[in-house]
Amino acid sequence: MQVFITGGTGFIGTHLVQALINRGDSCTVVSRSGRDRWHHPSVRVIKADPLSPGAWQQAISGASAVINLAGERIFQLSRRWTEARKSILRASRVNVTRNVAQAVRNARDRPAILLSASAIGYYGARGDDILDESADPGSDFLATLAAEWESVALEVADSVPVVLLRSGIVLGRDGGALPPLVTLFQTGLGGPWGDGRQWWSWIHLVDQVGLMLFALDRRLSGAVNLTAPNPVTVNEFARTLGHALRRPALLRAPEFVMRAALGDSATALFDLQRVVPNRALEAGYDFRFPSLSPALVNLFGKEKRPSQGAS
Image 1 (cartoon, rainbow, N blue to C red):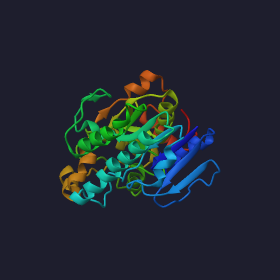
Image 2: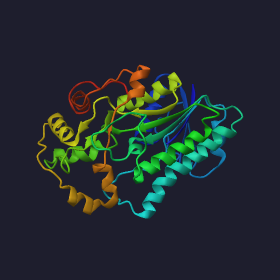
Image 3: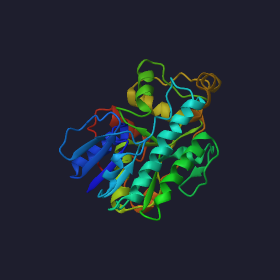
Image 4: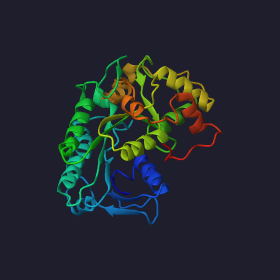
């Protein structure tokens, strides 16, 4: 299979490309830096900015599948959500997806499927409600951003099947939400934030990649929640992470302090969702890590970690 990928040099994309290589597929990766992380004959890197239409779009023609993962990181402690920052977050998702969708529609030899990134932020803050793919969208910034992001991808649903990858909080050692939290815990400063009763819908990196490959191979369409079947509260997450790292999880960051320090971006820590992956389970995906404790032991314990491409 020949797979065209945007966002392939990010945390998730790097592991996805490696999993595709491992199973014998070839990849064309669009990268602003042009950096080749794999140095493998099955990977072609095109140096281009997918924010702008260009010659890179022509490489979509003839691809078996397109996977669109591009997007600036939503939450960073050092970056508040100013209006300028929100514009960057939107453009890196909506504008790039529009360019990808246009290239898919215009391709002389169209791909068989488009997988396009989204996020469970689509559902907005919903308290203890259990949310599957049929739930309505929310109305806050992240929800409206995700809804627009998805609507642009769906503009080509009349031409090719479109899978909307609604990712939760991806747990891995080399990127995503965990590394900064691990640093805090290792220095003895770890613990929950706020009242800790908000939900943390997580997924192990192995299952994140595995589910994307599953959706690709099964030719799914529509929204798919990329989360483990057992979300936990922030209190439970902090306790479990502290146990896996053999460090205390005693300190609690007050919500009012974090909201004052982070502004609107604190939404990503407090206005969370309790999400379940009904589509994946109904389609027969077998989670390697359905529960949090084994997932964190796998990442930080002494057990051997499975291949990133497992599904």
